[in-house]
Image (cartoon, rainbow, N blue to C red; front, top):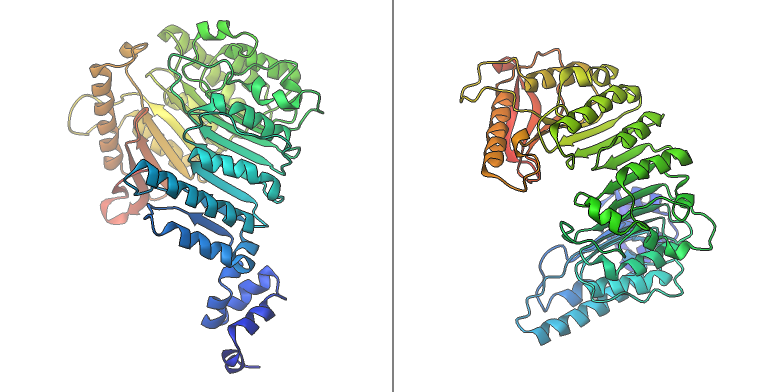
Length: 498
């Protein structure tokens, strides 16, 4: 048979033939001609994004309606759905409420049509989250759920759930109303191995006692210990004890970010919150061997725990809450004595310091790490390393040494990020014009130094070099494209990095 025969066949007949083909065969047949490519396009669609841009009030039903009506084609093979934030153009509250009800109806119907859905990402509206939770029982293949909640006035009904989730990610500024829901999801998902809870509410002054790890594990009381492997908690009170530790024995990745948790708040909730030092002592005593670690509060017990690890692949530390230069430099000295133990296993290293000092880049501190040549991702802070003048004529500075060291010893490095730090004189201050001015000057000087650096042709430069400010999104991106006509300069890409 030739293409003329199929060209004379009806689309329905060709689709009927396609039903006997598996997914890989469908992919191959679509490459043979434009006719098959267009007819079988819907059947190989794996990912759908709804509401990726603002919608008009008379548009939203039809896109979802086509998804529902063609469920035998599109929905049968769809494995991933992302639902963005529907930005309604209704001018009155009553009209907006009506449109929300219509959108909810079509979203629920569309999700019900996706029988093989494995990954679902829902963003922002509280009703969207409620609809997703209620549909979990009807999505037996759902493995990955990611929810971004904007507002929840109350908890959701989650009784009699039965989920097949393997990973759960929740981002919300209103988590006190949502912790019961998360706890029930965890309890009803026996195959769950990854948990990510990001509390985005402003925690600078007030913490809610109900937002803690014990509350997340409340539904596991009386159950067999789980085997969680990846846990990421931001803005959540944490205590490791006989209630939580049994579920963490298989843990390989842990991230705890509690930047603004003060000592008085820790002492106020001793049953659900421990000092940072007690957390790492408990993990070390229970024999938990992490391979990926992220934390934002440095202590000697953390350094001791890091020294006990044998297969550390990723280490991310944010040095922010240390009071006093003397204590900060002592901890830095202890840490950089331990760091070389992991030179043979580390592939990602992030050390960002809020203040200048020994936590920033020093060639002697990183020498052994660089010599092993295994790092693929590197991010660190930089002291102000140049005299305060507009011209760059001194190449003997830390930025130059960093680029040369990375180029000579890290051939597999994919990205290098350099952060500025505040001056030591501003330690403990919430704000200050002097600190901001100093950071801006340092940022500009480092950028000039990178532009002026001449790299030998024999070296392998990092493909991406990003220069960033502390706590600010502004950044500059340098691409390692050697311009031979200019003696091997790094070519600068004048596009802000995002």
